[in-house]
Length: 112
Length: 113
Image 1 (cartoon, rainbow over the protein chains, first blue to last red):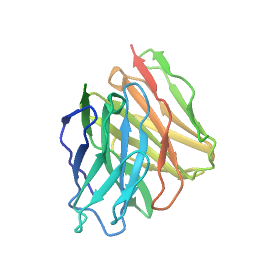
Image 2 (cartoon, each protein chain N blue to C red):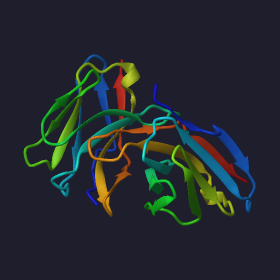
Image 3 (cartoon, rainbow over the protein chains, first blue to last red):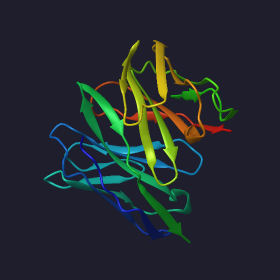
């Protein structure tokens, strides 16, 4: 299984960019990188995903290194509502089917 | 609006009881998943299903079973609940294939006393 490694916690000042790193050094060529976040007492919410190109949507940008062994989620202007646990995951093929496995994530605290 | 619905938000059961946690999705997704979430351990996959009547063990299947008789419904069963199964349980669903996102329910907080 391609596992991911993230820092346990990070702080970010409100209005600044939050850069959340993730290592996935054993990722396979056809496996996508996904990011989710979980705000307290809610189910995880999808943010963005990518294969090898950088991606951007209304919530965030995803930068994947050329060797695909790591990625960075960027929240361009963090707000207090972005305080959450952020999960970086890789979709793993298990007998031909995708198994979605989470790690422990990064707890992002946005500070006023 | 896409929806994954878990039957209960909070549940209290006694040790030894048989417990059913129900999850329904209205998106015609092939894949469905059950996770548990505990402080410091993140989300851990219990079981997943990629089609009706099909199931695969996740990382921590011991003490649990699942049932998927219809495409939209995925049930998690605790045959004999124990206190160490007190946890937040999360259900998710997704389409098959790469490049698709998973949608989560709001979770069921189960307490076994």
